[in-house]
Amino acid sequence: MSLRRAVALFVAFAFATGIGAAFWASPAGAHETTQPYVYVFVTESTVDGRVEFAIDDVAEVLGLDLGGDDAAVEATLRDNAARLQAYAAEHLTIGSEGREWDLEFGRVDLFREGPGDLAFAVVQYTAEVPAGEVTRVLEITFDPFFDEIDGRDGLLLLTGGWDEGEFDRDMESLVTYTSSSRAQAIDLGGRSQWDNFRSGVTLGIDHIKTGPDHILFVLALLLPSVLVFREVWRPTGGFGAALWRVLKIATFFTIAHSITFTLAGMEWLPLPPSKLTEAIIAASIAGAALHNLRPIFPNREWLLAFAFGLFHGMGFASLVSGLEVSRTSQLVSLLGRNVGIEIGQVVVILLLFPALYLLRRTTVYLPFLTISSLALSVVALGWMTERLLEVDLGTDGLVDRFASTPNGYWLALLLTAAAGATYAFAASRDELLPLADAPSGLETDVSSTVELQEH
Image 1: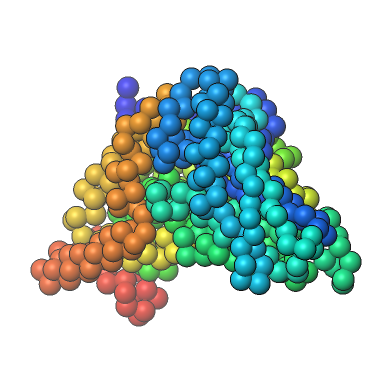
Image 2 (image 1 turned 180 degrees about the horizontal axis):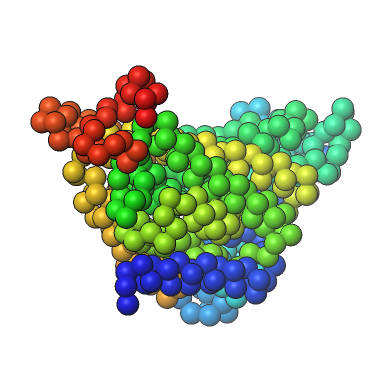
């Protein structure tokens, strides 16, 4: 079997798997990400709610054996209820005017919407409100797993507040908590959907920073963006041509994942179980990377970006799907997170594009393209195996060493410096490769505006 046919079959398999998963999926559950949640229900005189911790985080941080079926997991959680309650008490505080209120933590349960969905340990709590009256501003700290797990963030969902002096139980606030914003003052009468939107933007950016799978997919698409396929890969005709290819790929990826992101986030499109969604995303990385070795859609990488972007949108939608908030708040949060994701993607492109552009005319680039694409394929297939078989091959830890911040920034800086040095060395020896659009034997320096106009 030829390499091109093998790549075509793999891409078709990944795409068909995603389509089938989407159509046969059950409706989305309460939420599909491992971030911890805290619900805060406010009335004129009471504050109560619950915290939700992903059981994988609980097992890792508290050292509990949470294997087995759901009945066994729930029994283990309840046997260790005191430890869960103590951990929740250490990482959640509620108060006002500089004074923390006493929190009473109660029942511990296991929550899982359906087979294949993520499971959460749920701990109920009640706040002892002084004088039986809730003040306008609540001071809430929430930081579970922030210190133990790199990149972990949390989400607070608050209902109830004051509107022009009257209590409104339908008011909603969504607040993002990160390692740099663990304590926040929440004005029960001053928050608006704009605040929810900004919180969504923060979560979207943070998701790209802590989501190496999406970063690697963008990288797989970027690698050939500075080349044109003419029987073999050749350097693009200039900065404008290369930038246009990058923008076209990024735009179609954005359009695609925005479609499914919105539809799935609003629960108009059912989400597959989280592990299947993650496996499809991993398969898309492998498909895009293998396509670089033997393209089946030469110079139409935007088609791959659009097709697989539809499934990445389902992964993004898991950030907000099924939250216990109104459609309006959910849509505002979706829009904010979509904007945040786009900002994160633009940053990734700006960090990587200069190095790729400089390297494209050197003899180093094609081996770099091949090795990078093969490495991306191996990592992606490792991820897919981990997601489907629920085993730990150490892929996440390996990737985090390079893709997580600030390591990723330093790696991009070093790559750009090395690319600049390589380009300068090749130029000094008159060894720059001819451009795809240049006549045979003509060595065109596309950084020159005059030469760009000529070609």
